[in-house]
Length: 255
Image (tube, rainbow, N blue to C red; front, side, top):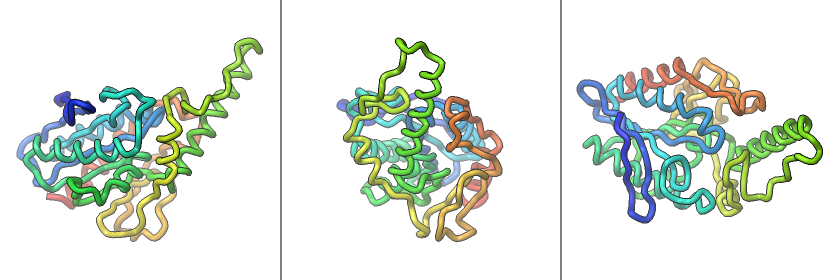
């Protein structure tokens, strides 16, 4: 595993390259994270997935969007347009690192919506998009995050002295993470992928399978993810078995 920076001087991105073990396959894999608490909750799980993909012979790259994680930029300046550009830059970096032209993009939760929005952008040209527990829409995702945030604050205030109550959100943050209105408005317009070719849905046992998707394009993870449950919001999620199942499936259908 090698840490690296790439992109432009104006917006440097941070990522990890997981080199393939042994002879590399002809296809490389780019992983797109979720955001906020879901990013934190799934961080180790995404790393495990990258490690298992590399062990299966896939050159793999995972990265942080600009204004998030360890990438450059202030979180209040984060914009969807920048994240879509980041995805294309990450695809280019992966091709340069691996020497492979064929890439698969795995998007987890919000990352799947972002990958779908970037599908037609010049420079991405993904052979396959894997949507891991993709929300129905950006609006559905944000509404769930706000519900969790409000319920969490209410639970904390119930235990606090009246003089130390948490104030209502000012609209620029969500679950303790900077969330500028311009970003929120753009994300609300994102739509989940439909049943077209070139998609694979990887779904947890407590997440609905997409309507209209062929049975052959749906891969059950075999584990519950608890995205909808408030008690799990701050609980690390390490889907080692699920990550192995996805890596093994891709190894069986891709060269």
